[in-house]
Length: 94
Image 1 (cartoon, rainbow, N blue to C red):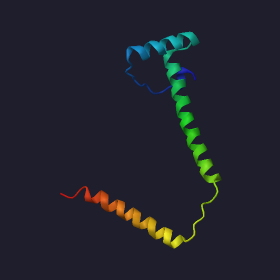
Image 2 (cartoon, rainbow, N blue to C red):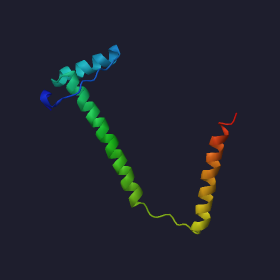
Image 3 (cartoon, helix red, strand yellow):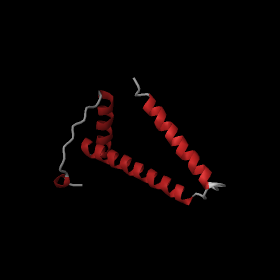
Image 4 (tube, helix red, strand yellow):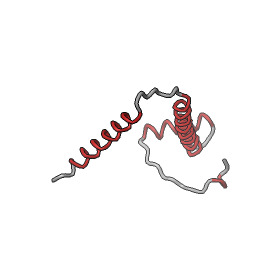
């Protein structure tokens, strides 16, 4: 990425140890600290996206769960949701 492609500036506050480790790592690799931080952010965000995509793929590939009686299960789910909503509302009673 060239500096002409960079359009936003962000300021970070780092403790001395993290700053030293970043500086040393950047020097070993022959890149700026900013480039190192951008790489780390990009890698982290890509991994989070990959993890989410993998979780979705696993859910979609999973075998369907057998449901013996859908109307009963649906009613129980609604009752459970309503009970949760009631308990939340109870916390706001004075």
